[in-house]
Image 1 (cartoon, each protein chain N blue to C red):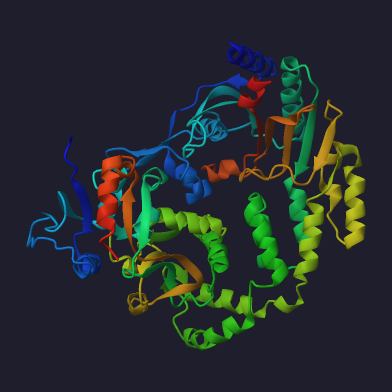
Image 2 (cartoon, chains in turn red, yellow):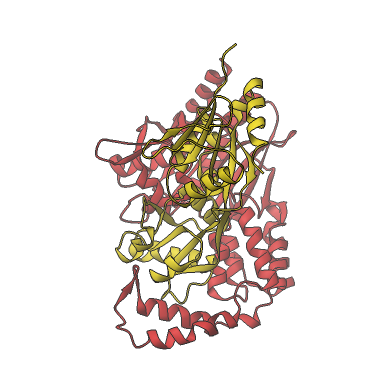
Length: 348
Length: 230
């Protein structure tokens, strides 16, 4: 009963603000998801093959379902979705295969008004259900990219750190590698120089297992010419770790980051970020650089809402400006969304 | 009382079969000569049945308790799904069937030496060809666990049933993971193992069904038999 009441209250709140409740397809073609996440996510899919050998999966996530619905039916302009439905994932015995997902998405808008709307709407709707106050944690993942861009690192390392920011455990291992300098040793390449000189005489357009000779030679040259010995891995790792500990009130965030910039002689290009001017109704907002690192497709603003007294996560979300293209859009379609942590909400 | 029959699984072909039979012979466990049949029995032990099966099948039958004890590869046990693996106990690692599951790439990819390189070029595949780096393997689960733990996520598994080494040169995949004991087959097929590309070291193992171990009488019979194997 509680579940029904809560979902009705939340959906009504979202609908009042112009969000449309839609039913999404239960089954989606697996390759759409594999194109996005590779084999990593495939493990969690509940999949089956049809008579033609095509692989399908039960929908694993309703944000993806909303995006696919937009691509098929809406195609252009801003569209606001809300939903309360089931998503299905293999959990290897840890949790239920079926997850209730309640959320809202604004697809087709890059405006900071949309950012503000999603955060304020979810937060105020939750406030109608729980007596306790909520606290919001906020971050912009592009700030991390800006930090990495201003570090003295070879491009390959910059890309690596950005690519794996959303996987905290592996990211930690990457930083250790950076500290110990165990990544690239020049003598490794000496061994292949002979092969390199031989390959230079090959037909450059010839392909070896999908890669052109020119591509292989170019990357080899780039690797041996990069100034590896000039990397102060320990120093850089220390800066990154210090950055990831920044946790302050949103109103103090810009100054805190400026101090951080000055201390390490960096340029984070803070003027580019709207985050500091975001008009959030709830004044209990924390800026935390470590927030929003669990979902691969987030690209910018991310947020998490907690019940203040017990620090229970009630909702989370963020901007995913590249997902629509990965799912098949021919042009960039920015989007932002958020989901209620329904199980936690029911426990309160 | 129900008569207990000990069911023993032995690989049905190849070196694993030969070495398993040698192990039994060495321990004076005499299996009736079978010629073409896949079922036999041990002459000098209580009621029993010897089943010759594919090494992968032995793992599955141990899991569902249709076989009480079997010999199979550590690699195959680890490749099986968690729900199967949890029903099997490793009794002993044997001194044969040694092999390594490795990541192998075309030897002429001279710019790729480590998994970190592989991770980097896998993104190039994504960006350039709007596709994925394809990895042929008979071991998709072990390959997935290994690569994702090393940060490689942008790839697609191509399931292989055999002759995996030729996949990169017949446009069926770009790289492979495969079992090797000396590395000579990989080398002969112009492939090279990545410097940090060892996924798993394997050997043959004596495996027990946990379902059989839960049956008191079966357990007694099982350990009586195991005493014979030194």
